[in-house]
Image (cartoon, rainbow, N blue to C red; front, side, top):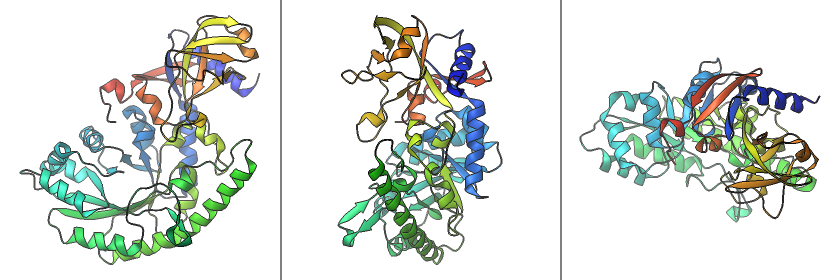
Length: 400
């Protein structure tokens, strides 16, 4: 029996009492992945990206481990909710236009002490001030440095379109603007190199593209390391007591942590290890989060149909954004139908061994987005479900 077949047998036994659709997290794999992130971080703390987990119980589990400290959140409303739930170090990774949440933040000393907001434009400070009302708490601010690699005088850009602050000088200018402004305090810098951390460099069947990605990423790491160090020096000249410099992501933890200027790294997807991480050479994780759909039809030889399954991931639309049939091994989509809203046909020899009601296990293309489809996660240890915990959705929290 292969390791994957053994996992399938365990998951089927563990969830035999549960009807599919059902989502699980294998705690042994989850904990092993957490340990690998800490190892790769080389002694620097790992801040957990909540968008990749979206389950408070699992956020608490990983933050209880040595090597993890703080949360990187994805909306201001989520940040406030987490702070009220007892998480005392929440860095909002994206600028917000949530006026009501800013009013709450500025009026509550506990929230203001726990939550740091992201800024890359003075207009965002104007929005906060306009939303304050009677709130007079000092708002903690993190400045975001754009990490994109720019070539040929800026005519070629590699990387996400995030912050407008690409040069160290512009980042320092904004730091001075914040420092002059009552009610705000710069406490950190973030620089997320998504084109390094979030792009696979070993895509199956595409050796030339994979080599090009590796060459691009090596060049991007060199350029960013120098620019990030310069940016940190420039901002520290304005804000000597800067608390943190955050960088990285699951795919680049060890490279980013090696930079002297970086004080912490961010990661989250590496806890679940979704399908997109199969295309990386920088690390090998264990799939920890899976979902199962039930077989509801057997249309013919070599074909079964499962209920639902059309859970595409965000990003540019393509086959790599679809969940993949994982267990039993050897199933594939019908190219003419793909993953369906209500039903999904699957092809392959293993289909003939599946009966009505059997489970087919899938891996999502990305990490936390799976939790937008399920109210609960069943936590598996060995061949048993040892706990069932709510996702954000299960707690009535759908922030985006």
